[in-house]
Length: 398
Image 1 (spheres, one colour):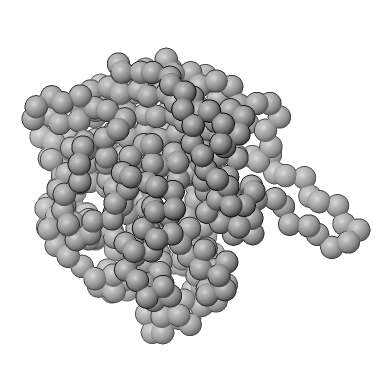
Image 2 (image 1 turned 180 degrees about the horizontal axis):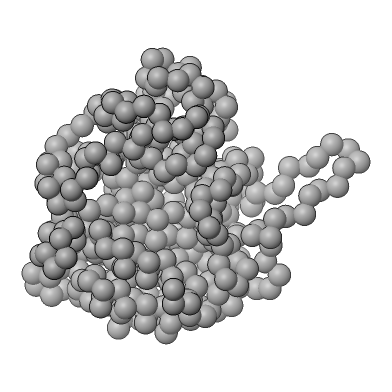
């Protein structure tokens, strides 16, 4: 185990304070916050021993390596931070290089939070309206003009997830697209070969197609590729030195972990999936980052640096998304056993799982990565790591 707690500082230089509830009409009383948003006691110190035990469990379930980083700003955003770093196993099976929290990885669907932030910034600038039809901005793209920007960002559009077809067989599906380059419109067209899965605006149904549409909106409204929008609006301002959008390049720059894809057949050999275009995902899942950068990003987001209060409030308008969780606009809420809720996203891309979450005000941010995917046991174990990090107690075995 590699672990340590060091003091440092992260000067976020807040541009806006944390989101506050909007005031109601004169004479009305503010509604009490929902139970999932109430925290009655300070967040306890993380249980790093319990966290490390779960990382080792993931190794026993087939992950070559696992790493986790906690950035704990206990008093203020610009005060000293306690940083906990834990790593187990190897980053590269070929030479047995040890896993490290500094390794860059593919973060999969955590990319969606970046895409949502860019669009909500455009809302704040008056260039986009959440409840306007996507067809208003991208005429003729979608088959139903009732689909709004909000529906897309909250996974309530009814658009079929084209990745269901691409990866019906995990390893052959991946090898077929490993070096392929798609346009965003080609990916949408793959979705539209199928009818809508539900009525626009109704139930939550996760679909990568939604965030491909988000990428098209970003490019149309900014006049830039999504890469430039991420760099100009998030990566540059936050000085995220490990965060890259290299599409259609196939390599992860600099120090990185190798990612290993688990075949569908039990006992099959792991496939090194590190080099790929991730063109099948793009604005839905192609970013590269590190645990440090993701913690910085989430602390800045929940701390109010990236969006005005109204934008962050929109992002946190939750729709039911399964037991103990909700989905907002590119942001997931998970409710823990100790009464604390955490906010962020998970990511799965061939060879990597990423778990990036922060607390109510972004004071404690946590990112964990494992360098495997298509492994349900590892996935469940890593979700359990939220309990020792934010509740300071082991997760119940289920």
